[in-house]
Every structure is written in structure tokens, then in C-alpha cells.
Length: 308
Length: 227
Ligand SMILES: Nc1ncnc2c1ncn2[C@@H]1O[C@H](COP(=O)(O)OP(=O)(O)OP(=O)(O)O)[C@@H](O)[C@H]1O
Ligand SMILES: [Mg+2]
Image 1: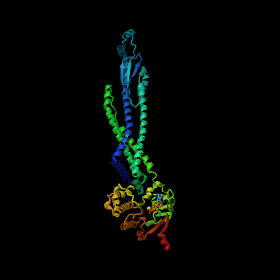
Image 2 (image 1 turned 120 degrees about the horizontal axis):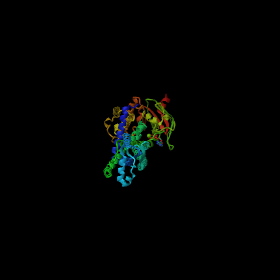
Image 3 (image 1 turned 45 degrees about the horizontal axis):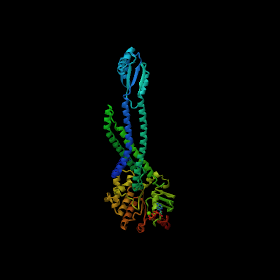
Image 4 (image 1 turned 180 degrees about the vertical axis):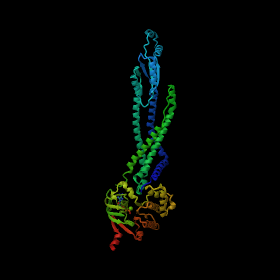
């Protein structure tokens, strides 16, 4: 006999809720299992968040990176101004500062103390300079570099310079760290699979009699598996929620010290906490891990009980 | 309806559950199965329900050759065969109602339909007022009747019973047998294993007698021979 879709749906909801009910009837062991899962998942989540923050921090340093364009000696002030206006309208450039030849000279005099020697020179040896601040691009660490290449091709530009070496190194390091977090996350994900698989195995053992009788009255394999799959799903989801809680608390505790530290450096840097997409990823991922873990356990421990 | 052809069942380890059985049970028949302890009665019933597979010969139930059934088809075969177990096999953490409902829940029936049919079955076995009780609070006879209700609630064409009166006093045994006769009257094919020779000899139904895994006597065959 075919099952109507509505009945099918209510059946799933019933099985899901009764699996949750079973977990709530043994609160202590459920809490222990889900806490183990929560701690295991909190580690990679926390590391990932830490890394995101480091990258934002690097971003805020990147903001202080500038490209200096030393223009051709013969560039007139008017031309310089035009070029500056053109660049300001361009995408990917935040700010353009104009240092005219005279201004450059005055600045040099003030800073170098070579004023007499410069007087003797007679002519102003300094070119006009444009100082460009590249716009911030998290998605593209090479943005400033590309901009530099482009600036070099401008006919007015004599020399274009950028010191970004350390920013590049930092990006390389965070990239390695990101891979590391990925490896750790995979290992701990496997640990979660094992924890859930083992929990479900025990549950199957405890409910042997029920499973057998259910089979005798004509239950399909899918019917018998379903409650265990839902148990696994709940374990994963609850573990994910605990991980969320743990990471949130940890970052909440970090928030104040970090802001005080940032203030000392006159930085606007604020700690990034878990956003909706990270929370969804964590909960969805943990639920899937739970489902998969119990699926593995169920396939191993429920098969083979039929004569073949 | 149930057809055995030279059926043997050797358990792993070499024990012979049944050796060489051949018989037919027609649709709508009510047949008793008897024989000494260890004769193979439970084994025979298990072969019909496909709790065990025979190691030789052929078992056909309701037109199906059981040897041909693949594992995923077994549940659907079992839905055609209600079984009453020797030791009841009720779930002690579920109410009487839920135990009986299990047969319908696995078929994916709706709630109202389940409620209606379970109450009808419990009413039939006289346990309607105990639907909220738990099996362990019931007497042996009451538990046996819950098991019967669970076997028939889905109205299967075949019902098997393994010593359904094993724990009952003569009065209750007669009642249970009367119940089975009622099911038989609405067309259910019944195969009932029992030691209670007194009771069944007075019922005038076909009796299969097993001895050491062989069919020792078939009362229907005797009648046929006498004609
Ligand atoms: N799972 C098993 N493994 C091995 N041998 C078994 C198994 N089940 C039954 N047997 C053997 O098969 C034979 C028949 O057993 P079966 O349970 O069918 O007898 P029975 O007629 O139902 O007896 P009883 O009246 O005591 O219930 C016995 O010799 C028994 O030892
Ligand atoms: Mg027996």
C-alpha cells in the first residue's frame, strides 16, 4: 500500500520528535555526549574565527599601505592636478594626495636639514609626487600590486613604488594557517563521526528487542533506521549549538581586552564574532556529521539481522 | 496458501530443525501443528514467516516462492503473515495500544485509521479497557491476547500462532481457540502449533503431527485415505 505524502511527512516529524524525546529522557548522558561533540567542534570554529580576525587586522594595516608615484620632472602642476582627479575617480583607489614640487622641496628642507646645500643647487631637483591609497580588498591580496603595475604604464609616471613585502608574507602565513585549520577541522570532524557512531551503536544495542519485534511485524529497513538517523541528527545539531555557545562566550571574553589593546594603537579594530553564515555552516555541518555518523553505525549494526 | 515441498532446515552447527516436510494448506483452512518438544514446530512456523530460510526444498506462501524473495522484499511478505509468539514478544516500555498499533505503524497508516483498527482488535480480544496498561502489569493470558490482537490487527491473510494457549487455563484456552475460529470464519488461513491435544481433538480440524522434523501424521490425508 502506498503511503500518502502528508502521512509520510507527519510520520517523519513524529519520528524526529520522539527521537528528541528519547534524548531528553536521559539528560545527563545526552549532555555529556553533546558537550564532547560541542568542544570538538568549537576548536576548529574558534580557530577559524581567530584567523578571520587576523586577516581583518592585516586588512586594517593594508589601509596604511600607499603607492608613491614620482612623476616626470617636466610635468606641470596643472597636469599633475588633472592626473590626480582622474585617479580619484578610478575604482580601487581610496585617496590621492598631491605633493607639488614646491611642497616636496619645503618638506625636504624641513626634514633633511640640507637647506643651504639645496639653496646652492638653485634648481628644484624634486619631481611632483602623487601618494595613492589603494582601496581595501579582502578578496584580492594582490590588488595593490596590480594597481602598481597599472600606474607604471601611465606616461606621466617616472617611478612607482610600493612596499608591501610584509603584507604579502602575512597573507602567505594566514593561508598556511587556513589550511592547518582545515586539516584540524577534518580530523575533529572524524572524531565527531566516531563519537556519534558509537553512541548510536549503544542505542541500537539497548533497543535490540524493539528492533527485532518491529522487523517481525513487517517493518522495512528504512523504517527501522529512521529513529536512529534522527538521533544522530539531533546529537550533531545539539553539539553544534554547544560549539556555537562556547565560541561565542570565548570571543565575548576576548572582546574587551582586544578593544583596549586596539585603542592603545589608535586602531579602529574590533573583534569579529560569529556571523549568520558561520553559525549556519556550523549547525548545518554538525547536523550532517551527526546524520552521517549514525548512518555509518546503522549500516554496520543493523544489517545482517535478516536471513539471506 | 502455504505449500511445503521436501523442506529441510539444518541450523548452523548441524542441528536439523525439520528434515523433509511436504504438505499444502489451502486458503481459508485452520490447521493445527503438534508434536513432541523439539519436533520442529517452531522451526516450521519460522520458515513460513521467513525468520529462517530453508536449507532444502521449497516453501511457497500466498503464491510466493520464499527462496526467491530478496531481503528488501521480506518486510512485505511478513505483512501478509501475522504471528503470535510463544513468549508474546511484547514491548514492555509501550502500552498495550502502542504494541498492537506497531503492526499498523510500520505500514504507514494514518493516526485515525490506526486508532480505529487497534480499538476494534482490542475489543475483539476483550482488552479494550486495558489499552493504556503496560504489558508487564497484565496476566499471561492477557499478554497472549495482546499478541493475538497485534497479529490480526492488520488483517493479514495468514496467521501463525506458536503455542498460543501455552500459559492459559483450560477455560481461557477455549476462549482463545474460539477467537481463532472467528478469524477463520472471515477467511483467514490459520496454522497453530500447540501441545494441547485434548482441546484440538475436540475441534475437528486438520492436524499435522511432527516427529523429529518429519511429518508423522496428517489427519486430512487419513480422511482422504479412508474415502
Ligand atoms: N536457532 C537454533 N539453532 C540450532 N538449533 C535449533 C535452533 N532452533 C531450534 N533448533 C533445534 O531444532 C529442533 C527443533 O526445534 P523447534 O524449536 O522447532 O521445536 P519445537 O517443536 O518448537 O519444540 P517446543 O515444543 O519445545 O517448542 C530442536 O532439536 C532444536 O534443538
Ligand atoms: Mg517451539
